Length: 207
Length: 75
Image (cartoon, rainbow over all chains, first blue to last red; front, side, top):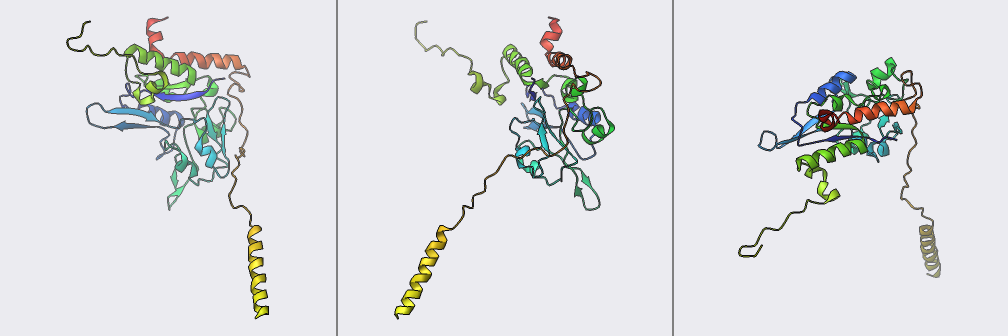
């Protein structure tokens, strides 16, 4: 069974925000809610790096752990989803999430916090597949169409990969080995070790 | 004097005994159970008609399509 994950390649992301736009368009996300954002480090400086961030569909999701009404569930593909009919908009999940994924639409005269909205991995929610209710509450269910999230599939530089964790990890590993750099941010050295380098020749030493 | 001492002793003993009756105040958190509506599998719909293999095949093709090294070389 697939275990769905996102992987953002900081070496390739050009901060075009195409993923953000694709997400908003595909799911008709309400004004003020961004299920996906592009975060840039050292913006404007030489060597700046950008990554696209949304719900990472954690294996041990903190939002699920803190929800007081237990409205979260995890699908058999590892996608973290929630039932908006049950959500009370308390915001605990927002505080618990290390990625700032849960979003809350502002509504009403006093800026009432609406029901939580977040990336669904384009997998809809607990409504009948392709129904109007599912689209209105959760957006499009591309996964049930046999497709992957719109953000990843439209990425021009393929900086954002989405899909079965094993497959996209293989793609990324292959890419890193071919270009020989750019994996440091993901702890490549920790996971696979650093490439061996021959010690510099000592002056005067026989070679 | 003896009476006052006896009363004081009785109160002290009662206090000590009350300490033994305290309950632990540490909360034990339990993992919650999903309370919302049930969701179906992504292949249980009109498009795939419950054919899990067909769904996995479609998703895998999309997965592999993200590897442009393979796409460009055509292998």
